[in-house]
Amino acid sequence: MVTKKACIPAMLLTGFLLICVIGTLGAGGIAEKKFVPDGTVEIVVPADSGGASDLLAHIIASLLGQSLHPVEFKVVFKPGGSGTAALAYVNGRKDADQTLLVANTSQILAILEERKNLPLTPIARLATDPILLVVPADSGYSDLAMFVNSASAEELLVGTADAFDRYCVARMNSEIGLTLRTIYFNSALPVINGMLEGSLDAGILNPSEAMEGVAAGKLRILAAFSETDLPVLSFAGLGYGELAFQLSRYLFGPQGMHDEARLFWSEALSIMTQRREWESGYLEQNHLHGEYLDSTMARSYLETEELPRLHSILDMDAP
Image (tube, rainbow, N blue to C red):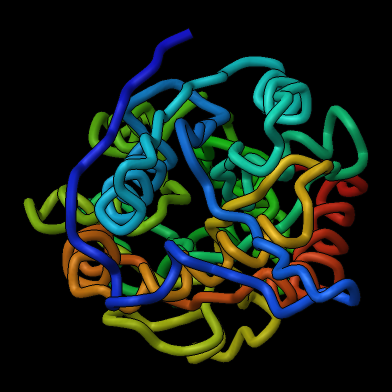
């Protein structure tokens, strides 16, 4: 287990909110104190250090640490077991109200592959990543139409780093009538290297993974799996309206987290996402969209949109 600590003193989020949360008078006339964190709060990452989930956990620890001082936020890494190691650790913690878990759509899918359910308490959806179809800049594919024409005539090979990437390719095959093949790697770096070395025809990446190669003139983005056009064209904007989905980044609590704690953390995060450090220091620098959903809306989105889609991915045959 690797642990990192983040405890940054001083500075309230927006003045009076968060620290003193006192309930209304109860039936017996005694004021009931709502949940307020104290001591140490753990933010669990279901992966090794150094990735996008690590970055999200530390920006949360930093910004909330400033507003909830002297509470200490400790980032804990629990890789392994396709996310089930982190799940078991989070749900095994005695202090459920002071245990948080960052997880994205791909990590949720990995848990569902093992467990078929998601025994966690949704606290918020914090951001979304557009998902990109990327090719080597010297591939000769200057736009999506050229790529589709070539893929219609031969089986091109696309690099993927998780099951959600493979789902993107499968949906392309289904909606456009292609026969793209995929090869799986355990991170985005081999996908990028494979394109640069000429062993891969394309790759599925998120913006933070692709932008360095794009800026260096080595990679080209052909389209984004998005409902609207971004700095690049979306599949929907190019006439493929069914190819519109995204990677969501969530914060969860353990299954046993109390409602008072769930609501506290949801509101704390809502205020956090309005800060300049979040907007410019995290979202803009990592090419993310700030599509915040509070606890109630995040649960609804998971139940009606995210989980049904992920279960359909588990039922499909990967290309």
